[in-house]
Image (cartoon, rainbow over all chains, first blue to last red; front, side):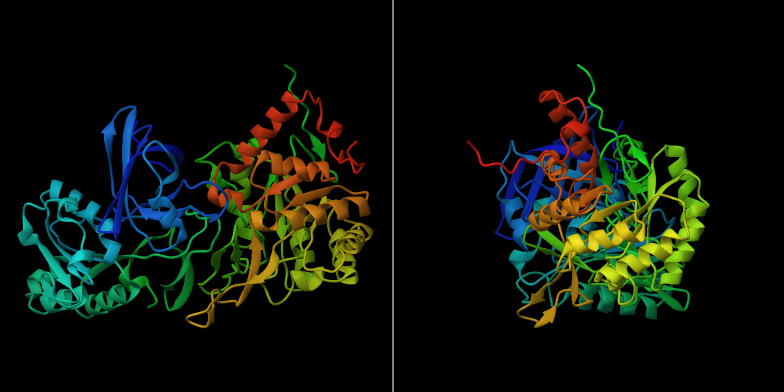
Length: 273
Length: 309
């Protein structure tokens, strides 16, 4: 039975490798493969002791394996003490993982074409979506943004990387692909679309809040459906600490909703930017 | 091997073991059903309930600190009516012993909550939150003085025949005096500690980390303070004391029992390990078996202050 409901597991690390000192990819063995929706996440810890105390939320990057022997992969960037400690763990050591958590991207729309936008480490949420859409032979394009070429995800991590026509690389310093912010690449390309194409378009985005805000605004102007994966500090990841709330529209009023439970993926129009 | 008797009476409600969840860290209990059968716990203490649904504080609610965390949630909750209508039947189905933590902005709101919840026959006890540091009115405003605690406890006592627990704040000069005031006001038990008021700032942005500026510190960082206060309170009152604060393991929980707590509540540990409460319970059972201790009563309060020979 694949894991499709939230569970708390121990996992044995089989690989934990850094790429260019920026991104790490960690792989661990779990009892069964996980059936997850792209955009869903896990709470992950594994360093000894009580400090830092809390597990870290990481997007589920990949899962596979066979009955009785599952495999789970995460990609992360070292941003603080928790991820630094995570990067120091070795094969054979144990991770504690709660997964799958939250509400992922809605990829079930008939006859749509998708734009997947990943800024920085945000690709860790959109690559799984690309993998699903690729398997389904759905139409999609991917926009990946980073400060420099070195900050882009390694090519071999890209799903469907053999068809590069569908991938738009963007770097702020111009060392690869489009010279500028991924946001501007998306906005420019949206400008050129026919009304017919606009109506078919769904944007899925994960990245810095400013990027999401601008993409949400542009999508709204042209009535394009956009789903954004938000991040926040969270203690539990499964809805009990109420620490990770963001402000959403609720009719003409606003309400606090949990990123971990009602999100992390929200309809961009719902978010109070 | 005989199973040790871990049952204990907590001011009128008998629980099967002394491991309880702490309010505010366990949702309404149901969120933990994917992880284990919550009816195994002594009791589930649910998130603080107010009369009307409460939206809580703006985002920027939690920040991690050394071996702990600060929170300023501001008691976001679904309100007592939805709790009774939607949650209680499901807790009854699960067979959990459950306790409602209540919070009001005025004494009258606490009274109304106690009256309404007294109608819930399956409810095990009411825990009065006189100690939340993250709301402007109510909460800690009542818990900071002996007069405040005695007055609030007495008024709520007058509204309910349910076992009445009062959850105390550590942000006081003398916890013994406060615990006695709760006892004199008619509490059947006291639970302590709630979080310790703290603060975190970002030295670069020059801003506080929490939207509320200050928040409540929890986690292993506060355990020594909680243990000391539990010890002091247990010496000061005859009613049961429920120890809370930074409990992460069975050993931590046993330490609270040793200094006089009748039971413990496990809080922040649930965030890190959703199975924390049952892991602690199983560890405690294993300890009693190993040490051949037949009943909780034979261990509880057994701290020896005599010098080592």
